[in-house]
Structure formats: structure tokens, C-alpha cells
Amino acid sequence: MSLLPHNKLKFSRGIEVKMDSEKHINPKRLQRMIKKETSASGIGTKAQQAIKLQHENQKLENKKKSKETRQKLEQLKFQIRQNKKKEKKKGH
Image (cartoon, rainbow, N blue to C red):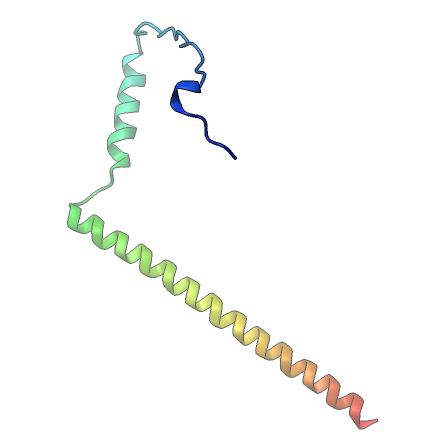
């Protein structure tokens, strides 16, 4: 792959974008939009939010660990069943 020098690059022309003029928004709709935006920030102080975030991260970590242990246990049970089947066949 060869790189072209900057003076050889071809650029397209700029595109004009028409901006919509400011539309009148229904006051009730505007109030709902404002309420939605302010409620999305969450409740509590920054410290409380940090603790909540840490708690959520810990929950995810615990969930991941429990899933791994559950999978290992299932794998172990499967292996035991396979070994039992092999032992039964050897007996005959």
C-alpha cells in the first residue's frame, strides 16, 4: 500500500446543510423533556453515585465468578458421568 503525498489527495466539495428554523415546542412537551433530562442524572451526591457504581461493578464481578464456578462444576459432573459410562463398558 503506497501513501500519497498530501498535495495529491482529492477532496470533495463541501455540502450545504439547511438548518431547521427554531420550531415552537409545546410547553407541556418541553416540560416533559426537561424532566426526563434532569431525572436521568440520578439521585444523590457524587459520593453516593460513586458508591452505587462500585456496587454495580462488584455485582457484575460476582456474577462472572459464580458463572465460572458453575461452569466448572457442570464440566466436572459431565466428566464424572463420562468416566462412569466408560467403567460400565469395561465391565462387560
